[in-house]
Length: 175
Image (tube, rainbow, N blue to C red; front, side, top):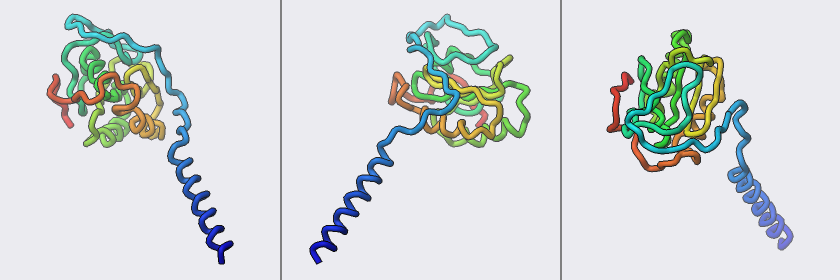
């Protein structure tokens, strides 16, 4: 009888240890994520960014952040960068992205705090996801890495100003 109890306790300890391991092991990196050197920070109301290429992932920005949400028109990077400093993920898409893919991105963004979605003129990738100092380019809204990126980087460990807001700034989201 003592052996049975000791065996059951040993199995329980091993099982709990395995569950603990599953919860604390590092998750695998998201393939294709580019980590940039620590972006500079600071406010400058005269700063501006040019469209084209991929959106910035940090740097000097305007004093006012962009309200998070869905935008059908491009937003100014100087405000979006400030939102990323607060923990937002800025999802941008090439204006010629098919309508069904844009709608798929909008569905993901609806009701999700700290997501900013907008077109980015002359973007070199169909879709780009940007967080402070981090970026991922994907070809399709069906790419499973989008959800992983959002889960990991919305107010993620890279966020310089945790606890800051993503509303009461500038802009009126359409969704």
